[in-house]
Length: 433
Image 1: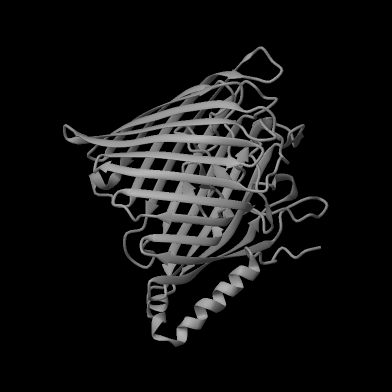
Image 2: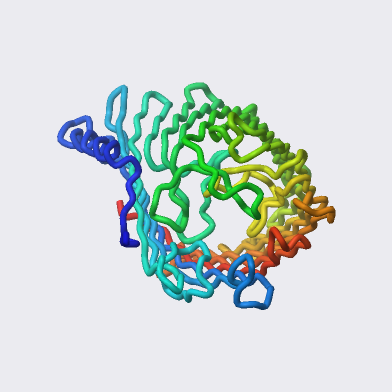
């Protein structure tokens, strides 16, 4: 059996070749930028995760009634500078390791740790992974190849557990024109947050919306972001998961001073349809969402609205977060024909002299859900609270403590389960270069 401490490299031969190439510059004057601009930091992340499915049984048709684990993770992020000259070369490395602190077989599978593969089935004691990324810069354009963590409207990597998801492929970002950002990418593999193995890229199968093993050879993305002025930004992105689905995204971000505060608007439209051979079946979805927020002094008041039109739920890649305003701690409110609204309140305690302490609470309600095989209207709601404190001085300066709590309820139990969830995260970032 493969050791849980197996290191996974992304495109090892390419990454090794790039490392040798960049190392070759270290003996010349051209290497000054490569070395001098190199940075490396390590994040220490300790997480306790408890999810109670509220069914009162040790096991159900959908699995165990509770997930309860704690683990310690370390994330090394090394980013080199570029060699000097018209064309600059560099290499990045992303190393991760996770260690089990507390877990039992009947409450494992929380997403913090991979399965041990033993019987009774529990979580591995430890695991690790490594991703290498070669990069080339010409003027204000950068091409990267290898391990990537995209943070884009149609692909946002997941970082909701101990270690983040990594995707593999190539991405080009260009800022040659002022206020205009162009991007293009092709990805073919991903390494899940609780795994060491690179897998074929696939569609997410949350709540059995789509089959869980529908994979594709590649995922393509193109995007344009244009900053119209200091208060308004427009976005257009297109993506396609080969022979499964294609998406178009249009977004508008704005802010406007209003009275003593600032009014912010975030509007998003995502149109999804099946593509090519339609290997996941027919896909028909148009997701409309918007968030308005008003920030004044230490307070921020927000209201969100989201609507799913079409016969299906909104598709997105496994290992990613959907770019929806009502995607929150537990749920995404993206079921077929669902309509949902959100109320949110944020407070920064700096206003009363407690620097580093922040609080948020929100409530999301969804209804009008088309439940497969039923004429009953699906309904669901979620209530979240979060308290975060960052130590401001002393020995533990910059240590972050974050307590998150969520309550989720639904009436279509065949596809979703009631949840009470608590997460406690203690993290610290420090530079090593």
